[in-house]
Length: 276
Ligand code: C2E
Ligand code: CA
Ligand code: CA
Ligand code: CA
Image (cartoon, rainbow, N blue to C red; front, side, top):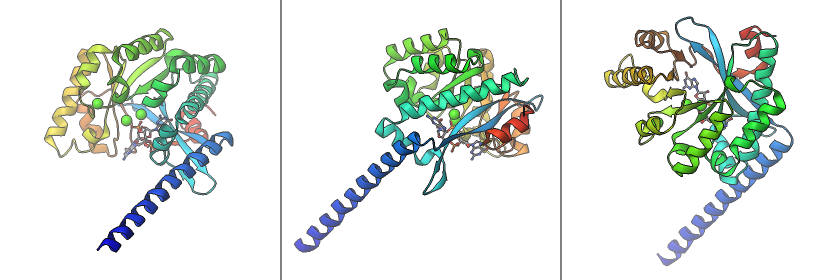
């Protein structure tokens, strides 16, 4: 039994070492990937539900790994956050998204907006305000057409400092959205404390509104509340016409989801909005 225990322990530490090694490898490959410019942005259409028109996009990062091909952010953002690489990666995302936004505007698409995701680590460890300022200056992008998507993990801690940063960001003229709204612990408190422009209702609430009465009630209530607070609201993860119709009946402003368009490469998105 003792022997078996020792073996189990050895397997356990080997397994741990293997995990740690894998993490190190991933960190190294991500760092190299950033140097070698292996990251690209995909753009998912943001659609005005009444008119059916595309009014902007959310930039979503992808990694073109030489070993693994196109890698989704769920597989590398946590590692990038863990290693701190999210700070330079996040800066690259902002720069690239602003450059693309300026292309749309320069080619007659003045009405389009660009949403960029900001990680909580990037928000705390990096100087987000300075990063945004630099990206706007380098690209010449219109601040009001840039929207930063913040998650509740940003808003949840360091309240005073976070509030100060948010005020400085708003002073730059950029818009702010709360991402994944409803999945955190005290979403309503944030609405009172932070004067954001938009709520994005998490797809977990939207997905089943046709069949789940509770989900429908929650989404309807959030849309009404957003209206009363003069906030824009986006329903995320709209995959079917039935869900779109239900949202239309609830007077939802904006939608995103596979039913309206999947995230796509820049060239494809430009063709979609008719700027190239
Ligand atoms: P998110 O910000 O909530 O982005 C929406 C995710 O939902 C995207 O996944 C998008 O492809 C997916 N999605 C859109 N419509 C539908 C739909 O109709 N059905 C379903 N099932 N999914 C849909 P993606 O691109 O894999 O990104 C996952 C997450 O990774 C994002 O969630 C965001 O938290 C993070 N992320 C992506 N790009 C960046 C980035 O540039 N910086 C940071 N910090 N995080 C990013
Ligand atoms: Ca987002
Ligand atoms: Ca979201
Ligand atoms: Ca939330």
